[in-house]
Image (cartoon, rainbow, N blue to C red; front, side, top):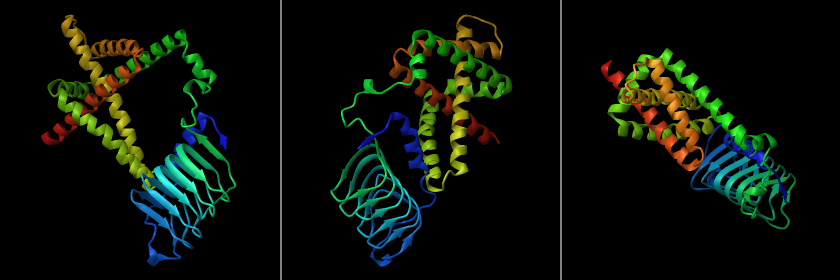
Length: 316
């Protein structure tokens, strides 16, 4: 077995998500000998029977796929959290993220097997012409044995870490100032929504954080990089950035009120941005706390935007 480095992970994940362009249902006894197009599988057990063929790729999520002896797949098989049994022939690569796979004695794989967190068995007599590339912690490898790229190692040094925090905070501050300059009135209204309904804003943003990526992922996988799926992800990213501007303005307005400062919208946003920059730079020493806090605030910011948009539609 040949092991590859951690750098292959993004390519394996990309192959899993992009391997299929259409969906269908792998057959039954009545369709014996049928040639099927590319398949998108989810749940249940799918059996490609002897003499049946797939002229394309197979992508599966949380499913069980059986390729019987005499069956053929003229493409790649990419599975997430699934079980795979191959007794027939696969002419492409096999990409597996989590799950179990077995290549029976009669099985033939002409491509490579790329796997992460997969438990696999290759029976005597089975043929795999390509490489077996594995990344898994099940073999007992430890985190400290993984080679860290030289560029990443430099970033871990204290001086570089401080510079990184300063540059990040400056960039976020400039972005917030630009947004408040272009969309000042809208940002103030969203901040008012956040102040009036913080819990509802958080719940709405939390639902959005879970629902939008899931819907976008389904669109991208099922119809091959659907523009709609990409647009949803881009809109979520933009909403997240605007949400942080709203949060910065909200925090800055509270600080200005407490210290009795007479500032304009841009000044308030700058104070709020600096406040969040300092807080999250200090919280970076406790990564889990930083991530959870950032996630909660991001949800509240996005949720306030949703409430603002919904209230605008109602007024219209």
